[in-house]
Image 1 (cartoon, rainbow, N blue to C red):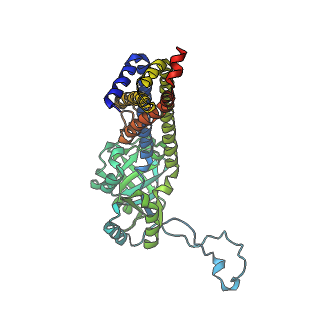
Image 2 (image 1 turned 60 degrees about the vertical axis):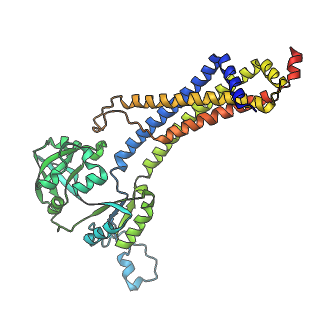
Image 3 (image 1 turned 30 degrees about the horizontal axis):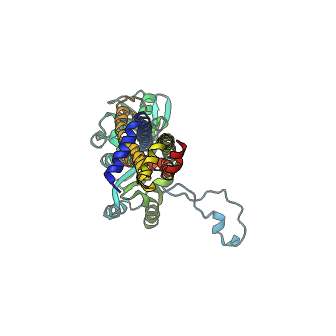
Length: 419
C-alpha cells in the first residue's frame, strides 16, 4: 500500500467536487460552532444561577433544630407504661438553638484536614421599626472575613464596605429590599426590636443584594458580637457553624459524622439544594442533546455527499480496481476523504465556537437583580472542545463507513461492461 498515492488520489477526488466538499465541511463547522457556543453559554448560565444559592451555602451546617422532646409527658409515667398513648399533642421541653461548647467544636474542626474553612453564624429574628409599623426581618451575625472568604460575601455588598460591620460598633448591612422598605441609606440609623422587646439602634454601613428579591427583603448582616449584644447573650453564643470541605461529595457523610460527634443537627449542601442540582443537570442534558443532534445531522450530510460522490465516481473506482487497487485501498481512499472533511470542519468549528463564545461574553447583561454581572456568562471549559473535536471525527468516520464499504465492493467488470 502506497500511503502517499492513496492521499494523493483522495485529494484529487476532494477537489474535483470541491463545492460538495465545502458544503460537507461547512455542515461540520456549523455543528461544532453551535455545540461549543451553546454548551459554553448554557453551562455559564447554570453556574450563574446555581452560584446565587450554592456559593452562599455551606457544605455542612451544624445547628440545633427547634423541635419538641420526643418523649411526651404521658410516656414518662410508669402508670401508663405499656399502654397505647394517643395523647400526643402536648409539647414538652423544646430544644435550644445555641450550640454548646462551640469554642471546642471550632477548634476541633480547624484541626480536621478535610475542612477548608469555618464560619460561625447567629440568626436573630427581629422587628425593624418604621414609625408605627414593625417590619419582620432577620439579623445574621457573621464573621465578615470568614464569610467573604468562604461565601463571596464581598461580591454581594453593592454599597459600602462589608468589613465596616467588624470595625464600626453597632453597625448593620441591610438587604436592598429591606433598605427600600425602611427608606434607609448608608449612614442612617435603624431601630430593631428583639422578640424580648429590647430595642437597639444600628448604623447602616452597607447594602446587600443577593439577586433573590424575597431574600433581600428580610435579611440583614451584622458582626457576631453585635448580634450577641442584641440578644443579650455571652460571647460564646453561636447558633450555626458553617463548614466548607475539600471534597464536596463527602459532605453528606461528614455531616452525619459531625452531628454524632458534636451532638448537633447537621445539613449538607446536597440535601439543602437538591432542587438546584436537578435543574442544572436537566439544563445541561438539554444542551448536550441539542449539540449532539447538530453533529448527527452534519454526519448525515456527509453521508449523503460521500454516497453521491461514490455514485458519480464509479468509473474512477472501476479503473482503480482494474489497475491493481484492492477493495481495502479504495476503502481507505474514501475514508481519508471523510476524515479530512471532519478534521477540517472540526478545527474551523472549534475556532468559530471559541470566537462565538467570546462574542456572547461581550454582550451587555444588566439587571437590578444581579448587580455584579455585566455581561452574559460563558464557560470556556476545555472539556467542551475535547467533546466537540472527538464527535467531529467519530461522526464523520461513521458517516463515511457505509459509502466507503460500498465503494470497496464495486466490481470493475460490471461497471466497464455497463459503459
